[in-house]
Amino acid sequence: MRVVIAEDNVLLASGLELLLGSRDIEVTALVTDVPGLLDAVERHRPTVVIADVRLPPSFRDEGIRAALELRRRHPGLPVLVLSQYVEKVYARELLSDGVGGVGYLLKDRVSRVGEFIDDLRRIAGGGTVIDPEVVAQIMGAGNQNVVGSLSNRERQVLALMASGLGNTEIGGRLFITDNAVHKHIGNIFSKLGLPTTHTGHRRVLAVLTYLDEGRA
Image 1 (cartoon, rainbow, N blue to C red):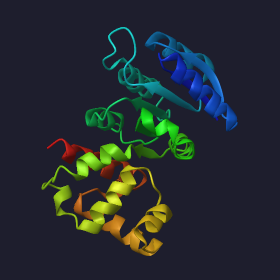
Image 2 (cartoon, helix red, strand yellow):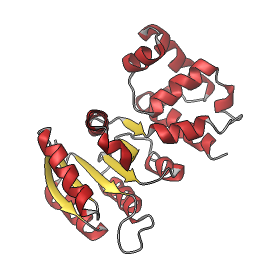
Image 3 (spheres, rainbow, N blue to C red):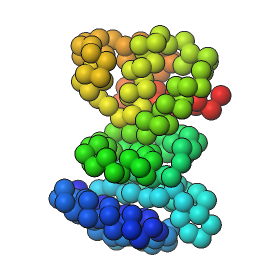
């Protein structure tokens, strides 16, 4: 795996480089701003991009905007965005193309090395990973619209899907069989009105619907 990192905090950037290197993941470029990021991706064609949400000069949303631009230029390019705080709108924007290969994690997550590497590999493989803290805030919002039509178990399954877990991992967390997980996911797709023509992306679309409800 080859990674480009866009992070203006030198200590965090260096720490990420050392961490990834220790897991035989090559960091092909460390950059601190959007022009550097766009150039590094064109030159190095990485497997995955890791970018801070807030980059110079204004430290608002330059990182997320750059990530979206990279996804436009290179459809399906896996992108992991790191943020200091929970900002659900950023997670929603990353998922807007319905393709997958995206992640939105809080920076604190990096310290959980094993989980972070697993998340990065999921994203590189086309999966979707949303930070559990974002998921928890959405679950606590008490949404009563489309997602509110799901049973408690279906909502639990959807929350774990949003966290990037596969069927077997979801079953392990909830102590249910793979067949039961498959049935719950089928019910979720049906209740959310996700057509069978979108089979390849329905997990992403389900999570997108979930995040939309979290803004209600």
